[in-house]
Structures are given as C-alpha cells and as structure tokens.
Image 1 (cartoon, rainbow, N blue to C red):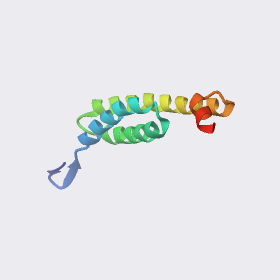
Image 2 (cartoon, one colour):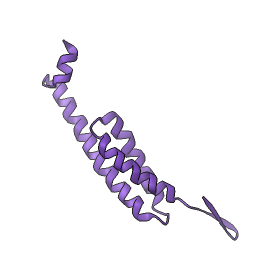
Image 3 (cartoon, rainbow, N blue to C red):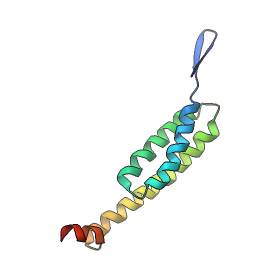
Image 4 (tube, rainbow, N blue to C red):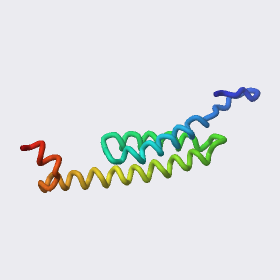
Length: 98
C-alpha cells in the first residue's frame, strides 16, 4: 500500500514483514527437507530485511531470526545427509541403490 504524503510517496512494507514471519514459521518445518527449506529461509531473510523499515518492524525481526534458525538447521541437515550418503550409512539411499 502506498501513501501520498505531499510531494513524495511512502511505501508501506508491512506485508513484507508479515511474509517474513510466515516464511520463518513455515521454514522451521521445511528444514527437514533441505531442498524445500533452503529457498524458503533465504526468501524469509530477504523479506524480513525489506520489512525492517515498516511499522511492523518487530515482525520483520522475528521473521529474520526464525529464518536464520531454519537456515542453519537446513544446512546442518543437508551436510549430515550428504555425509551419511557418501559413507554408505544412509538407509534410504541404500534401499534405492539395491
């Protein structure tokens, strides 16, 4: 939503702060599957950064924090999955290769 305040327009970025919070919450579930979690977390961080200048700054900050936590969990999960698959100890990969 844009507001006209005299000579210049001020953009309301509250929706980006809310979107960041929602993506952060969804991403906390998405970290289980890194290929889904990583893009959600990155978009959540970007939306939160853009929403910091809005009236709902606290939601933007909360979204950034949740997205960073989810991003760290996604990266750890991806690394552990790659290590297990490379060492031959990953049950799902072993069943697929049989």
